[in-house]
Amino acid sequence: MTAELVFTRRFCMGHRLITGSSEKCAIPHGHNEYVKVTLRPVEETRLDGHQNMILPFAEAKTRWHDFVDNSLDHALQLSEHDPLLAWFRAHEPERARRIVVTPGDPTTEVMAALLLAKLTAILADQGSSLRVHALELEETPTNTVRLTGDPAFYLPQVSRAPQECWWNRADMSISDV
Image 1: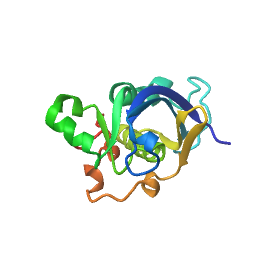
Image 2 (image 1 turned 90 degrees about the horizontal axis):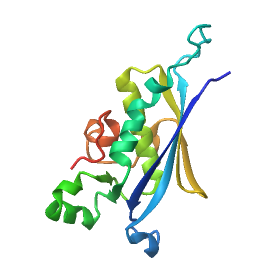
Image 3 (image 1 turned 30 degrees about the vertical axis):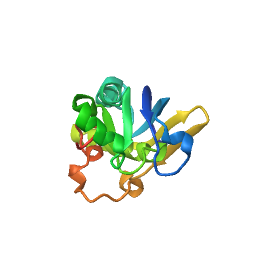
């Protein structure tokens, strides 16, 4: 038997893919995305007959929802190699803080891996009795990426140390710029 807590959160985002996936996706555009996380206890336990919770929902989801609502929602997702990033830094530096910077194109696949790593870091920082079992990122009603396991397996190689990457930190950051 396995008990799971499942939370879904909606956010709006914009991005563009500049490395040749399609000309249509190279133009900045947006999606209304849903991120669904499945959490499992680190150790299975029987409900106690009193509180009867694995963990109070608010305790399990508050920091994650804060990150989604205040860092991801209405953010622009750009590759660290996208010339638009340099433009924002030069001309609108105050808005550059609202840009999610990704290693390579900000595809649904890489965003799912980055978010899986971020939530893993948040739970570890909280000393949570829960771990991430799965993360699903729905870009459109017909396109969803679902990841399970260690996020490091999916993440692209980067030249920075892991603790220097925003996705491995339990803070509310969305870039390292």
